[in-house]
Image 1: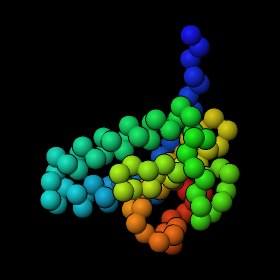
Image 2: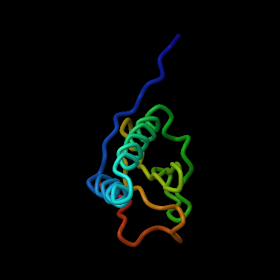
Image 3: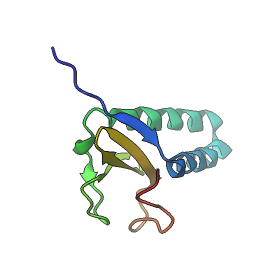
Image 4: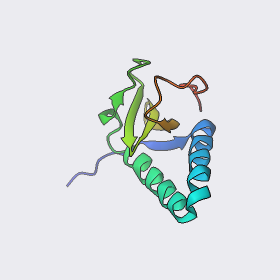
Length: 107
């Protein structure tokens, strides 16, 4: 059995802030739920390193290096660069379009 090569994962500072902000909002109601949500995000993002091109192209940007998956109601956007997956941003999927404050080239 051959192993599937994994990509290295990096989180941009922007993505870390996004996840922290969502977790803080959830924690105001339920700290345990916030911790569980963060754990799901981490697992979800780590899973993208196995087959990163399986995520769909980000429709608003149409760049082949930018992909997205969904976790619950959140869009998880990452950039594939050679053998690295860079988590770019996480934002609520019910927003219309790409967030003005989200930088698709964030490192």
